[in-house]
Length: 164
Image (tube, rainbow, N blue to C red; front, side, top):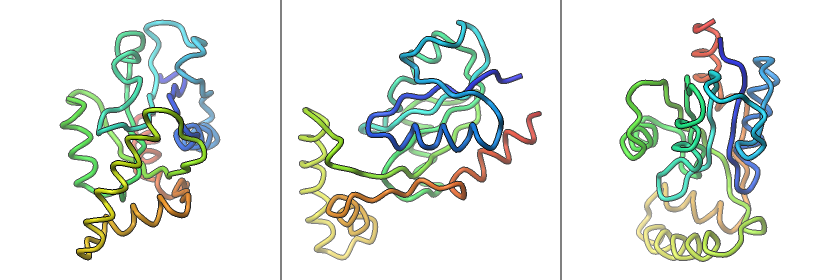
């Protein structure tokens, strides 16, 4: 039986998903840095994405019995995003979920902010060519978008309820 939701958040969107999931499941949620869950306990892990990698996932795998993992990123929530998440993070033995988070440039600092500015420039060029995904990302960059919703958690909640 899963004991908790453990998450790693950078700008707050992953934490918002952990809070929503907690409210729906009754599981407590804790930041990975809190060390409030005993080693070896079964958990759901949620982490933010940077260059396709789920931040904190490797640490969570070493410390906990990860029963499901979710990566929170900016791009649209679809099968392509999920497949890339699975491939880039070498996920093979647990259910994986991709959740669309958001972007708030005011919360970013240092290298992450710098890299996102570079990414924005690349996406701006693609947007000029009419690339729909690039247009959405450029809009999110300019307008600090938040896509976190209970609806985005539907597949993960269905999995959780069926696993009980």
